[in-house]
Length: 466
Image (cartoon, rainbow, N blue to C red; front, side, top):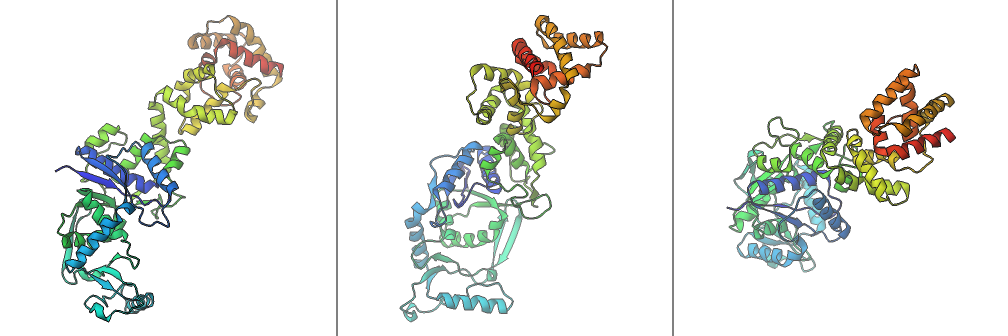
């Protein structure tokens, strides 16, 4: 059997972090078994579905590098097929027309609440003769759910779960306007697409029992199901924006790398021993549902940020340059010429050791691209006193003659400080401020090496002149 999984988002908003994890788990499971991963946009709610949301979902999937097999399936385009199955259930005696008015349904729900029961439809038209139907009510088609017995689900994550049929009412298959409901459409699409494994959040667990009954009524093979516990915030509460429940595109804008986010989401509800950091290939090789947790996982932005810092350090300098260049150009309001990009590339090894996000990396790299005179942070200005500038003036002859290599620069400047009877910090602090405009930067000798002799001297002279 070829494993077939699917991700089926509703295009009513962005691809949020929980949806991204669901997509990732389905993708990993399919790739682990050499199967197929399908993408279906569940846009049956035409009023709430938007093209903007569809574009955001597809862009998020591509950014996470979760490539799907085949074309995207749009659920609303299969409406005629969904209706055909609903009418087939009617012919088989597994569905019936319900003519209850909205007022009658409201009354039923209120009566159920008064009796201490969950509000639901009481089956009034389940066994009535349609000849008794009022002429002014457009009927809905309801599934005739079994009244007695139980349904057992062998969930691949939650284990064996049994539900008494009395807890389920007769759900609507076709609305009064003849359009199919989401619950029916999902079942038909999963069957027609050949889905063998449904991996989704455990908020769909009750739906699973309804869907199993319809599968059985149609005499279709029921897919294996796995219901993953939802993601909570650090405080154990339902995940919200304050915890990090943001759209995938927001994480991109905040400077996170897709591989870092995927690594973090994979570990959020699944484990492989004590492994915290692993490659995409390792995740595919290791992933199974046996090691998925049964308890809600907790989203920790600090952990994600630290993991992102690791991935930045491991990322090639050329890719990082491509990522930060647009950010720097936006701040400078100009395009980066080849010489500045070359300078950034030379300085990337030092810059990326300190950055936790791409935004931080771009900010820390900005000083390499400034034209003279440099902008100075307040702390840097406090260092650049008249006495400090006099010390910088004394360095200029040395700068013009010394071999321009990081180790040689350090040895020469330390010797110069010793000859002047100064602690090295007395020279290093104003030198850092003069060359970077900051009180904190990569190592000063590294900065000099990256800037080169001509730019280093020009920056010192500019400070001295000012």
